[in-house]
Amino acid sequence: MDFLAGCIGGAAGVLVGHPFDTVKVRLQVQNVDKPLYRGTYHCFQSIIRQESMFGLYKGIGSPMMGLTFINAIVFGVQGNAMRYLGQDTPMNQFLAGAAAGAIQCVICCPMELAKTRMQMQGTGEKKSKRKLYKNSLDCLARIYKREGLLGVNRGMVTTLIRETPGFGVYFLAYDVLTRSIGCEPNDPFMIPKLLFAGGMSGIVSWLSTYPVDVIKSRLQADGVGGVYQYSSIADCVRQSVRREGLRVFTRGLTSTLLRAFPVNAATFATVTLVLMYARGAEEPKECESATPGGDRHTQLQQQTQASSL
Image 1 (cartoon, rainbow, N blue to C red):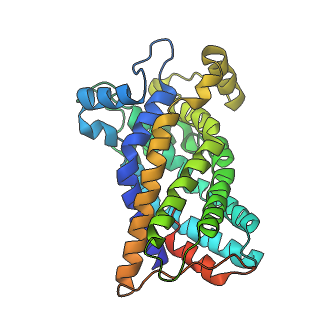
Image 2 (image 1 turned 120 degrees about the vertical axis):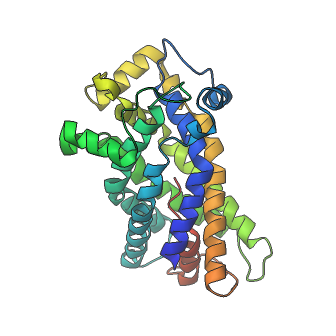
């Protein structure tokens, strides 16, 4: 049931956050010499005007399809890692989260590759005159046919570098916040507190690895139309810094942070509601103060945490 709730909560998070993700990717990979967008608001405005509201949801099929597998991996690995580590401590939460983040890259990397390519397709066109890809699956199939497994896993190293510490920081921040703000058995503000902790954890996690995400997006968008600009991660970093300075590592950060909180809020709210409904409107279990091997605290986290980075 925790897995099902996590999947439904994750789906809600994708629906809320995908428009912000599209804006983030467009800003990260646009040509600095001929920029199409002046900033986050202008990018939103331009996409809606030129491509309609549906333009903001380009590539949503890929994260929706990968959601079930990613949640299965994250919940399974994080839960088993915590049981293996034995004690429910902040450091163990970080290690368990990092392990979950690393292993789910097997699904996350191809999923985000297809998402990025679909988001870049038909930029500035209300109705694309020539579509390279029909949908996310067609995108991956065409990349595989042209470039093999290496092409489908383009950006895997940067995804690993981003997701491993990113998930570790996410679970660590959530654990620290839920312990510090406290939850009482009959606290009427318990759910808002959990939503706040989840939203802030997402923001902290993104801030910790955002520069890597910029490079990942550029590598995954590279090669659209058959023209490759970067030969490696180092070459991408070198060219990006030389042409745009260190500010390149903050491109699209505003839309990412605007997305992080509501996405996590939507995910946590949905997970909580699904669990309460499934258990006959039973109140979510209460948090307890941090103690070694705090099982009840761990249960609450497993009920509410979802893969929403």
